[in-house]
Image (cartoon, rainbow, N blue to C red; front, side, top):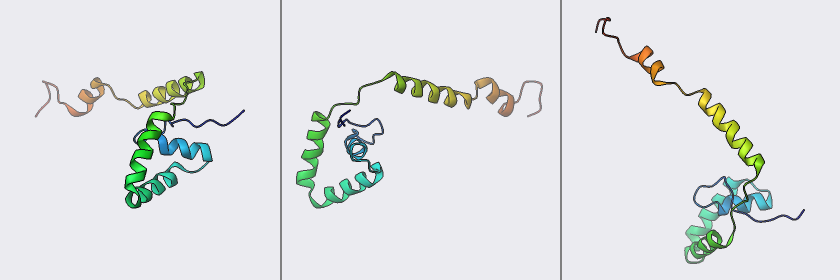
Length: 99
């Protein structure tokens, strides 16, 4: 299977830096830091290159495995949600309680 360059779902702005990091097996933070340093030094070249990358590099195709991971993350996130009833029970006083 050949490697393909895609914009990452681990994105800060458009996923270009994280996509490059995934393609070359680097840490996305390192690639972003290098991008910022180059941006400060060569802004007239880096900004158009990033915009071109946003346009040309395709988004990663959505797979059923991604859907499964998304649903599992949503389930675990919902486990920690408290309902309004819990809020009322712990923080609001009822009409029969002293204020």
